[in-house]
Amino acid sequence: MTQVYLSVGSNQEPRKYVAMALEAINVLFSPIELSPVYESVAVGFEGDNFFNMVIGFDTELPLTELDEKLDKIEQDCGRKRGEERFTSRTMDLDLLLYGDLIRHDQNWDLPRGEITRYAFVLQPLAELAPDFLHPELGLSFSQLWQQGNFSEQELWVVEV
Image (cartoon, rainbow, N blue to C red; front, side, top):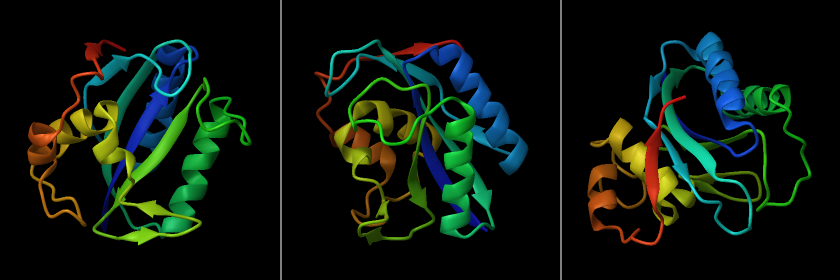
């Protein structure tokens, strides 16, 4: 089994689409672990606030099959591929970690670079898996959160 962590984000009807994605992920990968859901302003473009969280689970699926299932969940939530990188969306599922795999090429960014760049990724990850070590940096996610400077990236917990 491989421990997987993925980020969930939505700023178009986020209550609806986050709940929809959680239900689909739970059906496929139960049991799952959930971070709190955070709201934050859009980063990189002007748009409605995002809801973000991190989900953890174990899987036996190979990386490509897992990615296909996550893409299908995004599509079922109304996600249209080919969208700009920084734009509003119904659902964004990003694979943050696939065990301790390190792979940076045209297909994969693992561990995902956003982990250390954005508070809306690192804070929920640090809460869900505080002692899990970043495969490249060798620091726990709680250590990375404590050392990070995210004062300009305000987050607040919301109920979904």
